[in-house]
Image 1 (cartoon, rainbow, N blue to C red):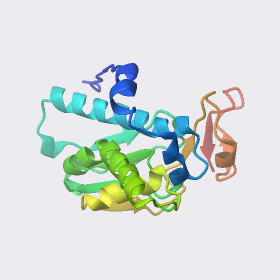
Image 2 (image 1 turned 60 degrees about the vertical axis):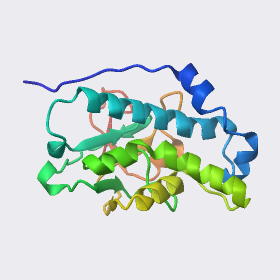
Image 3 (image 1 turned 135 degrees about the horizontal axis):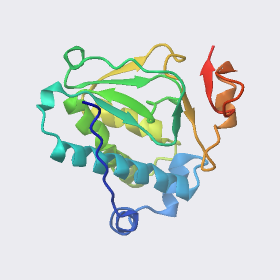
Image 4 (image 1 turned 90 degrees about the vertical axis):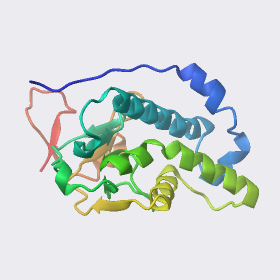
Length: 206
Protein backbone atom coordinates (compact mmCIF):
# COMPACT_ATOMS: atom_id res chain seq x y z
CA UNK A 1 0.00 0.00 0.00
CA UNK A 2 3.02 2.31 0.06
CA UNK A 3 4.24 4.69 2.70
CA UNK A 4 2.01 7.48 3.93
CA UNK A 5 3.73 10.85 3.78
CA UNK A 6 2.47 13.95 5.55
CA UNK A 7 3.75 17.45 4.86
CA UNK A 8 3.34 20.38 7.20
CA UNK A 9 4.49 23.98 7.11
CA UNK A 10 5.20 26.48 9.87
CA UNK A 11 6.10 30.15 10.04
CA UNK A 12 9.79 30.69 10.74
CA UNK A 13 9.26 34.43 11.22
CA UNK A 14 6.61 33.86 13.91
CA UNK A 15 8.94 31.48 15.72
CA UNK A 16 11.75 34.03 15.53
CA UNK A 17 9.60 36.73 17.07
CA UNK A 18 7.88 34.71 19.79
CA UNK A 19 10.38 32.02 20.74
CA UNK A 20 13.86 33.33 19.97
CA UNK A 21 13.66 36.88 21.27
CA UNK A 22 14.90 35.75 24.68
CA UNK A 23 18.30 34.63 23.29
CA UNK A 24 21.11 37.10 23.94
CA UNK A 25 24.55 37.73 22.51
CA UNK A 26 25.80 37.40 26.09
CA UNK A 27 24.86 33.69 25.95
CA UNK A 28 27.62 33.01 23.41
CA UNK A 29 30.45 32.46 25.95
CA UNK A 30 28.56 29.37 27.11
CA UNK A 31 29.13 27.87 23.65
CA UNK A 32 32.79 28.45 22.91
CA UNK A 33 33.20 29.48 19.29
CA UNK A 34 29.51 29.30 18.22
CA UNK A 35 28.37 32.26 16.08
CA UNK A 36 25.05 33.71 17.21
CA UNK A 37 23.29 32.37 14.09
CA UNK A 38 24.52 28.86 14.92
CA UNK A 39 23.02 29.18 18.39
CA UNK A 40 19.74 30.28 16.82
CA UNK A 41 19.89 27.35 14.40
CA UNK A 42 19.88 24.91 17.32
CA UNK A 43 16.47 26.24 18.28
CA UNK A 44 15.23 26.57 14.70
CA UNK A 45 15.83 22.91 13.92
CA UNK A 46 14.47 21.95 17.33
CA UNK A 47 11.28 23.85 16.59
CA UNK A 48 10.90 22.16 13.20
CA UNK A 49 11.35 18.80 14.92
CA UNK A 50 8.67 19.57 17.51
CA UNK A 51 6.19 20.93 14.94
CA UNK A 52 6.57 17.89 12.68
CA UNK A 53 6.31 15.43 15.57
CA UNK A 54 3.12 16.83 17.06
CA UNK A 55 1.59 17.31 13.62
CA UNK A 56 2.18 13.61 13.02
CA UNK A 57 0.74 12.76 16.44
CA UNK A 58 -2.41 14.69 15.67
CA UNK A 59 -2.98 12.98 12.32
CA UNK A 60 -1.80 9.45 13.13
CA UNK A 61 -4.67 6.98 13.52
CA UNK A 62 -2.80 3.88 14.74
CA UNK A 63 -2.20 2.91 18.35
CA UNK A 64 0.69 4.86 19.83
CA UNK A 65 2.11 1.65 21.30
CA UNK A 66 2.86 0.23 17.86
CA UNK A 67 4.97 3.10 16.58
CA UNK A 68 8.73 3.45 16.14
CA UNK A 69 9.82 7.04 15.60
CA UNK A 70 12.75 7.93 13.35
CA UNK A 71 14.27 11.40 13.64
CA UNK A 72 16.64 12.53 10.89
CA UNK A 73 17.92 16.05 10.40
CA UNK A 74 17.73 17.34 6.85
CA UNK A 75 21.35 18.57 6.96
CA UNK A 76 22.62 15.01 7.39
CA UNK A 77 23.72 12.67 4.61
CA UNK A 78 23.05 9.03 5.50
CA UNK A 79 25.41 6.79 3.53
CA UNK A 80 24.37 3.27 4.52
CA UNK A 81 20.95 1.68 5.18
CA UNK A 82 19.90 1.58 8.84
CA UNK A 83 18.21 -1.43 10.42
CA UNK A 84 15.07 -0.21 12.20
CA UNK A 85 14.05 -2.33 15.22
CA UNK A 86 10.48 -3.62 15.46
CA UNK A 87 8.24 -1.84 17.94
CA UNK A 88 8.13 -4.87 20.26
CA UNK A 89 11.95 -4.70 20.56
CA UNK A 90 11.90 -1.02 21.49
CA UNK A 91 10.44 0.04 24.83
CA UNK A 92 8.42 3.21 25.34
CA UNK A 93 11.36 5.03 26.93
CA UNK A 94 14.06 3.52 24.68
CA UNK A 95 16.04 5.65 22.27
CA UNK A 96 18.96 4.65 20.03
CA UNK A 97 21.41 7.23 18.75
CA UNK A 98 24.71 7.03 16.86
CA UNK A 99 27.92 7.30 18.87
CA UNK A 100 29.73 9.22 16.13
CA UNK A 101 30.05 13.02 16.45
CA UNK A 102 28.73 13.01 20.02
CA UNK A 103 31.18 15.66 21.28
CA UNK A 104 31.00 14.46 24.90
CA UNK A 105 27.19 14.45 24.70
CA UNK A 106 24.69 12.70 22.41
CA UNK A 107 24.59 12.98 18.62
CA UNK A 108 21.61 15.19 17.72
CA UNK A 109 21.30 14.33 14.02
CA UNK A 110 19.59 10.94 14.03
CA UNK A 111 17.58 8.86 16.50
CA UNK A 112 15.21 5.90 16.70
CA UNK A 113 12.81 6.07 19.63
CA UNK A 114 9.84 4.51 21.35
CA UNK A 115 6.69 6.62 21.90
CA UNK A 116 7.54 8.19 25.27
CA UNK A 117 11.18 8.73 24.35
CA UNK A 118 10.10 10.38 21.09
CA UNK A 119 8.04 12.98 22.95
CA UNK A 120 11.03 13.90 25.08
CA UNK A 121 13.37 14.03 22.07
CA UNK A 122 10.91 16.19 20.11
CA UNK A 123 10.79 18.75 22.93
CA UNK A 124 14.55 19.11 23.38
CA UNK A 125 14.26 22.87 22.88
CA UNK A 126 12.76 22.99 26.37
CA UNK A 127 15.92 21.43 27.74
CA UNK A 128 18.12 23.74 25.69
CA UNK A 129 16.37 26.83 27.04
CA UNK A 130 16.51 25.53 30.60
CA UNK A 131 20.25 24.95 30.27
CA UNK A 132 20.96 28.44 28.96
CA UNK A 133 18.77 30.22 31.52
CA UNK A 134 20.36 28.20 34.33
CA UNK A 135 23.83 29.14 33.13
CA UNK A 136 22.91 32.82 33.19
CA UNK A 137 21.87 32.65 36.84
CA UNK A 138 24.88 30.60 37.89
CA UNK A 139 27.29 32.53 35.65
CA UNK A 140 28.93 29.31 34.46
CA UNK A 141 31.52 29.80 31.74
CA UNK A 142 32.58 26.24 30.93
CA UNK A 143 31.63 25.81 27.25
CA UNK A 144 28.68 23.60 26.38
CA UNK A 145 27.27 22.47 23.03
CA UNK A 146 24.04 21.12 21.50
CA UNK A 147 25.13 17.52 22.06
CA UNK A 148 25.76 18.03 25.77
CA UNK A 149 22.43 19.79 26.21
CA UNK A 150 20.67 16.89 24.47
CA UNK A 151 22.42 14.39 26.75
CA UNK A 152 21.34 16.26 29.86
CA UNK A 153 17.74 16.57 28.63
CA UNK A 154 17.37 12.87 27.78
CA UNK A 155 18.92 11.70 31.04
CA UNK A 156 16.95 14.23 33.09
CA UNK A 157 13.80 12.64 31.67
CA UNK A 158 15.11 9.18 32.58
CA UNK A 159 15.20 7.74 29.07
CA UNK A 160 16.96 4.48 28.33
CA UNK A 161 19.60 5.74 25.89
CA UNK A 162 21.65 3.35 23.76
CA UNK A 163 24.53 4.66 21.68
CA UNK A 164 25.10 2.50 18.61
CA UNK A 165 28.46 0.86 19.29
CA UNK A 166 29.58 0.58 15.66
CA UNK A 167 30.46 4.11 14.60
CA UNK A 168 30.66 3.00 10.98
CA UNK A 169 27.27 1.27 10.93
CA UNK A 170 25.36 4.55 10.86
CA UNK A 171 27.42 6.67 8.53
CA UNK A 172 26.07 10.14 9.14
CA UNK A 173 27.85 12.94 7.33
CA UNK A 174 27.21 16.61 7.98
CA UNK A 175 25.91 18.68 5.06
CA UNK A 176 26.74 22.36 4.80
CA UNK A 177 24.58 25.18 3.45
CA UNK A 178 25.94 24.69 -0.07
CA UNK A 179 24.93 20.96 0.13
CA UNK A 180 28.55 19.79 0.29
CA UNK A 181 29.75 17.24 2.82
CA UNK A 182 31.78 18.69 5.68
CA UNK A 183 35.45 18.11 4.69
CA UNK A 184 36.36 16.76 8.10
CA UNK A 185 33.72 14.05 7.84
CA UNK A 186 35.09 12.67 4.57
CA UNK A 187 38.31 11.74 6.35
CA UNK A 188 36.45 9.70 8.96
CA UNK A 189 35.29 7.04 6.47
CA UNK A 190 36.82 5.15 3.55
CA UNK A 191 34.61 5.57 0.50
CA UNK A 192 34.31 4.16 -2.98
CA UNK A 193 32.17 5.35 -5.86
CA UNK A 194 29.07 3.23 -6.45
CA UNK A 195 29.18 4.06 -10.15
CA UNK A 196 31.81 6.13 -11.92
CA UNK A 197 29.07 7.72 -14.03
CA UNK A 198 27.14 8.87 -10.98
CA UNK A 199 27.41 12.11 -9.12
CA UNK A 200 30.59 12.27 -7.02
CA UNK A 201 28.52 12.44 -3.81
CA UNK A 202 26.94 9.02 -4.45
CA UNK A 203 29.33 6.96 -2.32
CA UNK A 204 29.28 3.96 -0.08
CA UNK A 205 31.55 2.86 2.75
CA UNK A 206 33.92 0.04 2.03
